[in-house]
Image (cartoon, rainbow, N blue to C red; front, side):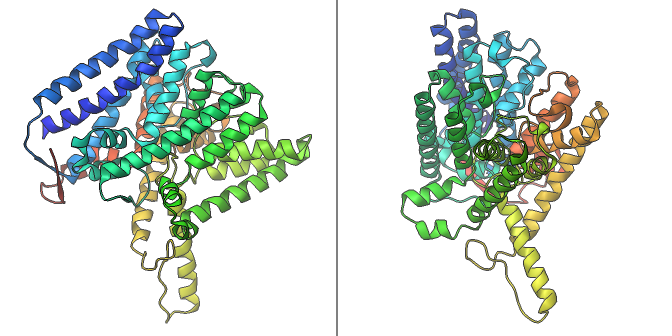
Length: 490
């Protein structure tokens, strides 16, 4: 069991090490030998560890029950966040190991909140790596491993279920490895298209790729202190707005579009709810901004960008929404509780969960009026989905427990209550900015080290949908062997 876990872990560490080759190449091109070494050294260690376990791999299958799957996923994510922090620390860009680890966790969990006070002073390679961690963590490093390493395809669905977002996970091909490859093909295509469009707008190659990584990963790290607004290009803002929304949609929708299953797309309850939320939020925010804006076009652009940024949990910025009118701020605050769609790279509670609760509320009201009739919950046009209600309710309960604990931790560290609450929502929802002293123009550099580590835990819990990390540290992880189903890994 332990050997199989270490083998999977080292394979994934090797993949992350391979991803370090890109920023290392940028550092070499910039003539920064020390920065290049900061990436090459960890990458080589990852490759060596992967090679050792590859050579020692045995031809026998080992049993992994569900608790070990959740434990493996949590352990892998903690390990890759620690591994990803090494270049940040070795390069000297983050002199504190705690800050480097916080930044790495924020990157891989696609939260995007930073401890760096001047990102434009960082080496280009470091900035690219920060954004690349969003891209790797957005769709999931385990999903990437399942797509690239055939050995992980056996039983890989259980691992992906513990990593991916949403109350339901689906395979839309016969084999989980093919599903993972399809998802990553869509992901890479969208990233490439956005990078090309940004390059055509005048951004440098590194800036274009970095912001494509952050956008499709719904992370929010930028190479500019002013985030996307630092470029001052409306075309760039609209491109990022469009792709933030694209990244917030369940990637299974794109597969259905490509395969011509348009009826299923039209019947997707979550997609319809998501588009409705976007339309209402943008309209209300734009109308609220019009009084203080020189033009409707500017108000619409600003409202659309910030709504897409917060709803997708990306966290990019063009305006300081703390300076907006109260009605527009209320829209942004409400979006902190929603998030993107399940099966996307976005964080948050997810639109599908609120859709289920809204439909259940409607049914309960109908039962009060017609007590002798039978009502069932429909999702995507299919009836009999009432079993999702307790699943959704228990998740939201656990989610707000984490938010409450993080709020209390922030208050203990000296944050005012509203800042502590919105920071907790931001960390658990992987959003990035908050309100108050941790607003969109601020950063977390002044926070105590203990609070940074607690926030790192909160970010990981939010990215892994709460249960995975809670099972690792709670009593449920010590459930009796055989209490749940098993699956096999080679």
